Image (cartoon, rainbow, N blue to C red; front, side, top):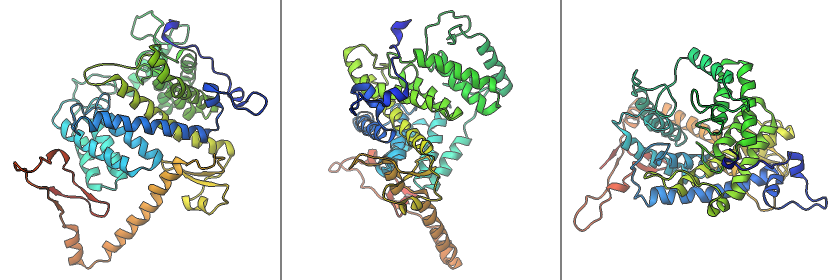
Length: 449
């Protein structure tokens, strides 16, 4: 059993923050753990962006910007999600625009197909598409994606499971969870299937990690402390046996780390955030070397998904996601009051940097950053401030409302056509690069010609 995971040798957070007694920061993994959250987040962002660029090159550019697998699980929609996560952290509008292009291609590729789930079907395309279109201020696309989502039909033939199916009735869920808790192993881990006596798997797909995440969600829905306590007990199994010799979400370190983020959100206990930080640092510091040595498995290898690229998507998404939580926790630790708007923090003293959370929870605080370092969340605020967008929308709405009736009618019925050259023997075929986007002022064309 122990050959499936690395021993957990992490020290307590207070010990990790201590140097050698002479003011020197320790080296290696412990040195990473001792970094302040803001500096560590910088490291995560830089690593994640390098991996993101590699993913885009391999899965989109080298693929001729064509979609052969549209799913979130193994296909192009996963790349779109990665780009959107990058935009949330860095405010890079180029990432947002490319994510929108890829989702549109996935939308075309998934039309008429019977698969319906978020992970492996059309629901994922429509849901992510609507979110990205909303951030692009493209209301027409938002409406299209939501309408397509409403058209998805769930029949009785669809199985009751997450990956390919649907959820069951709430009462059945509660009773099933209670049954699972009652029948867990003495170690606290969970069987991979009914009647299986092998206490080996500590995975998102089988074992304590996936159950912990489910129980945390169950507590949020049912407000039953029994589920909350069971989630915490399952998280202890993940901490002790969850440093798997794989990097992935489904059965790897990345997926197991999400358990601690989930418990941190649920309880507010910063010990869980430190544990998530520890698993993330383990990946950042050791994953590449361990994979190269053959000690750690790179991931799944199949016809659809090269293992190296799959790892890059997993790790980069994982690191970007952590950045959001680290900054929020730093604000909480310092007891800083939240400003009404991003501009309040910019009028504060130079020691205070305004931070706009990409999930639109504004915060500000005196982060002690290294000279010359860049705050990625501050960039996100400057590039995509929800307050600025709201003001611009209000001004536009007022200008339209003030038009005389005839001009307003003409404006509301205006259509944009975007023309591309017709293919001839002497000109290249541009069908693969056609896009409705015009520019930031006119947004998208109604018709492509």
